[in-house]
Amino acid sequence: MDICIHIKLYTFLQLFLSFTHVTHSNGKLPGMLYPRDSESRSVRHLDGMWDFLIDTSPSRNLSFQQQWYSHPLRMFGEVMTIPVPASYNDITIDKQVRDFVGWAWYERTYYVDKNWDQERIVLRIDSAHYNSIVWVNGNQVMTHEGGHLPFEADVTSQLTIGGTNRVTVALNNTLTPTTLPPGTIQYQSDTNKYPPGYFVQNLQMDFFNYAGIHRHVTLYTTPKSAYIEDIDIRTSFQGSTGTVNYTIYNAGQIGFVQVRVDVIDKDGNSVAHSNQAQDTLTIRNANLWWPYTMNSSSPGYLYKLQVSVTSQSHSEKDIYRQPFGIRTVRVTATQLFINDRAFYCQGINKHEDADIRGKGLDYALIARDFEMLRWLGVNCFRTSHYPYAEEIMDMADQTGIVVIDESPGVGIVNDNNFSNKSLEHHKAVMSEMFQRDKNRPAVIFWSVANEPKSTNPLAENYFREVIEHVRSLDASRPVTFACNQNYANDTVVQFVDVILVNRYMAWYSDVSHTELIQRQLEYDLRGWHAKFNKPLIVSEYGADTIAGFHQEPSFVFTEEYQVEFLQEYHTTFDKLRGEFFVGEMPWNFADFMTVQGITRVVGNKKGLLTRQRQPKASAHLIRDRYMRMITGNTNICRV
Ligand code: BDP
Image (spheres, rainbow, N blue to C red):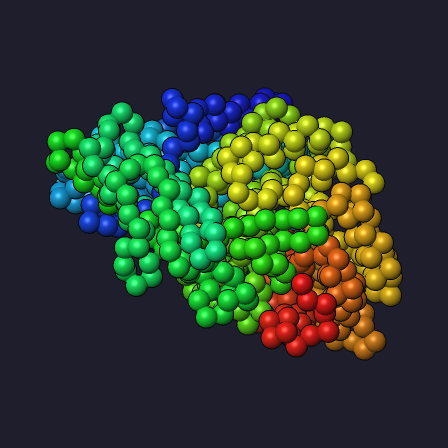
């Protein structure tokens, strides 16, 4: 019985995974341009209140047997009202919903304007966690594996134009050994203790496995056949002249008869143009994209590549404006350069996590977070441990905050997480990340994983392949991952361009002994550099701290301990900075929710800020430190 359910759950996940990650005949992944309106395109969000029903049947398969997509959801059970975008977990007061594992169903109806009858209409979901199947008016239109990246389909032929339509999304949050992040479903067969078929989801990361439609659901239009499918922009500069190398991909077979490409500056002027779908443009007196700490007068300078294409018959014209920045990234054995100037990462780690909305997109939260990033003096963050919303990435581009763009490859620790199936999926996710974020100047590195078991002999080949794959997509950005292993037996750091290490001396080891931090940290960091001769960032360091807990002398979990702990790390960072040390990233920006367990008291409390985004004492310490770096009023040896 148990085994039977087990197989059913996995089989069902696999049933549709086999036809995801579509590639075109030329091997190119489908474009994933962010929906933007223009003279030729309309955008309509389907956000709002959706009907919601979870499939609690023991097999988690009843919804498919009954074909819940075939009729309105309310015909199959008592639906709840759940907002989109949001995680569903913390909205209701029902524990079964919060902790649910399996298929959760979303549905809403919407009207499609009759003026859209000449358009191609695309349905895009910016992110839904984890596996999704989508129907329009009862017809399956797309599937997607992965919880953090967009997917879309041309739904024109499925829609009733000038009438009502129904979209149904089935979402499964089950994590298996081959998902990213991986997890396991554990069945309990002792019926003296557990009811028949009882199972739990085990996670291999500490953050709560929030699920739901986390970002926008959008309908957007393009012309029927002559539309811009993708735009790839690579930039460099020589002296004051910028170079913009671009490729415009068109839709399938239909050739464009006319292409017009303009580089538009911030004032709306065209500063270069071409009539080719692929070309290299030069821009005199180019404004480079700078982190705000390197150029406070015009940080995050963005141009737009304005692309306009016309069809053979001249009946169709598509226009799309893609923001981009001109900047370069380069590393040597000891330094990191942005636009050929040394950059030091005054960093932080984040999570897309807050209160009731879980991981749901929230503009107020994004604005507050960027406000606090600037208040802290942060010039760099890592998207630990999955790609963040495009709206967050936009803010980073616009404000000149650098991003280490990390994949959801967190918790790759068991042998069965290194299988060929996992590897292929990991590569596909990296391709999707690249497709989405490739034109973003803020993204300076790709991080393929967080804390994999990189000492496992299986890790070497696995990550060699993943990293080679990323390099084949993008030769312009360094590739890395966050490592928590030891330099003596790690097998993967040999492949990266920059070393990221996560360190918790005086927390997960020698707890309370802050006096050991400097000795252990310096020995460790020097060891990494001596062995690999690459620049190094401490990509995590932190201690759990309950806001409002005080004790002098310091005691674990108090604000005093967190401050003392961070200060000890800082002394070593400052010592090594002139040598090979290029950045620091406290764990974490804010407290965040975790699974329930005896080592976490209502979540991970290593935030500098509370989950409500208010500062602990440590936030003032980091702010003071980073502000001194910005003003140069520091004893630190400056690069
Ligand atoms: C690190 C993980 C991070 C955890 C952190 C912690 O990378 O995701 O939240 O430890 O335990 O190992 O606080």
